[in-house]
Amino acid sequence: MKVIDTRLLDQLKELIGGSQESLNELVETFLIEGDEIIADMNASVSSQDLDLLRRSAHSLKSSAQDFGALELSRLSASLESQCRAQWPDDDIEQIQRINNSFQSAASALREFLSSQ
Amino acid sequence: MIDTPEQRVLIVDDQATIRTKLSCAVEVLGYTALTSVDAIQAKKQLANYRIDLILLDIEMPGQNGLELLKELKASQQYTGIPVLIISALDKERDHVIKALELGAIDFLPKSVPQAILRARIKTALRIKLNLDRENEKRRHVKSLTMAAALLDEANYNPEHLHLESTMERDDELGRFARVFVSMAQQLYQRERRLRHRIRTMRSFGLMLVVGALCGLDAPLARYAASFDAQSSGISLWVATVICLATLPLAIYRRDFPPLSWYSLRYFMIWGFCAVVLGDYFLLVVAEHLKASVLSVLLMTEVSMVFLYSWIVRIEQSTGKRFAGLLIGLLGVLMIVINPDELGETTSLTWLLIALLVPLGFAVIDVLSATGRPMKLNALTRTGIASFFGLLMILPIAWAQDSFVSLQLIPGNLEFLILFWGLLDTVTVATIFIVVRSTGAVFGSQIAYVQMVMGILLSLFILGESLSVQTWIAFCVILVGMLLVEPKREAELEIPDDAFVSIGNHPVISKSNTV
Image 1 (cartoon, helix red, strand yellow):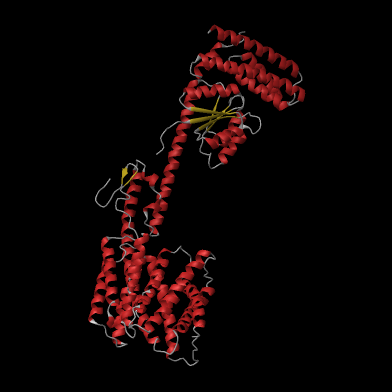
Image 2 (cartoon, chains in turn orange, cyan):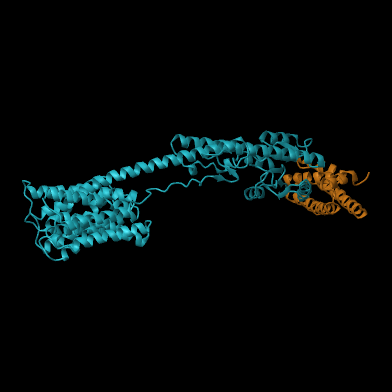
């Protein structure tokens, strides 16, 4: 399975007017914010803040979808869904999987951009 | 009219990625994008800019999107701004339904294709534009309705109608407003002309009556001289009658002047001119001059007022008016140098002293015309001024030991004092009203009528006679006064071209149409 669905990236590029420069800027924003969101997820575990964990998963889910990181989006959506009911049992493991998926997506995005 | 200038879209989302993405997308579509990370920042942006559309995220820390939406829709100021919710319908169905119920016009998927984004933003902005146009039209209809209500209350002043922006409209409503204002303008001018005519006629009428009453002054003073009583004593009683006739009423009505140095000075000068110069000096000179000569001299009040008005430029001065002033003074000079009219004394001093009396009246005219406005009844003013005059005449009466004892059973002297006091009360208060509404120069022309009345009474009641030279002098003074002429306008008319055009639209006038 491909880490990045490039058709969605093309759709995003079209949405922002087809400018490669704007797309690069947008990807950089996503990568910086993604790191912050994962840091928030880890912080929510320490403080047992269920709402912060759910909102973090929600945010990453939406952005990941935009950048074609479908696996990352799916994992985030699953965590968000579980957080609506109660604190997930395997919280650490799920966050770890999300982090791994994000790192893979980040590498793939940088590779994709450098190839443009 | 509403045009489509820069249209601003406010994006409210806590995620920097979404804000940046939508901001780029909105700018690409030709709109101006503003962004806010939360509800607090969004409200600041709303306060600082005219916003045409809000793209609102639901999941936000602090006040979430639904709470902010509810607040906006409850606000009269922001309820008209369309809101598009940023949400995925499949995952957040309940939130989307709730947002639509609260007043959001549609939702926008987070991963939205450009075509859908463009279509939804355009639709939302069109709704906003139509709503703004409708609101503006409603506002203009309301302005017209209020203007019609004003006309119904006979308030025809076009400046009070506040239809300037309605008249700028290019549609039928604007045309209607222009016709409406034009008709109001015509009505207003007609009403003002009529009001001016009525005021002038009323002032003339009042002037004739007051002048006739004032004309009694010189013969009365001459008659008073026949009593064995000092002038200061009679003046004291006359001032007392005026105070008794006016001040109790002023106290009852709580009609008091403001306590200030200005008020004190104002009433002291008025009191001095009315009681000391106007009554006491009149009585003093009446013992030495014929009432008819005195009446002619009193007429110089007009020239004195005109001279003052000319110097301080409170009224228009023309060569004609100035020539009238000089001719009037020439007439006075003819009397002064005429030994036949010097009466019991051969000294010119009494004639010159007599000129202090019209000087006092002239000062009162100027005070009435130029004094700072005070919410005070004319009778109260007369009473307070007379009270101060009474305080000034008191030491003179005391020094001359001339206090007049009145009899319990009133005789001629008592009736004279009572009549004179009441006469002064009515005339001084009425002169104030006339001068206040028509100007000092116009009002001072009461002296014309006063002179004619004074001479007639002197000739037919006191049995005096005037020499030919005095009659000539009288005619010369009369010619001079006619040249001084009344102040032309009691109230300025609106110039005919004041409302000819407003904005770029010509207004219908008497002779043309739009």
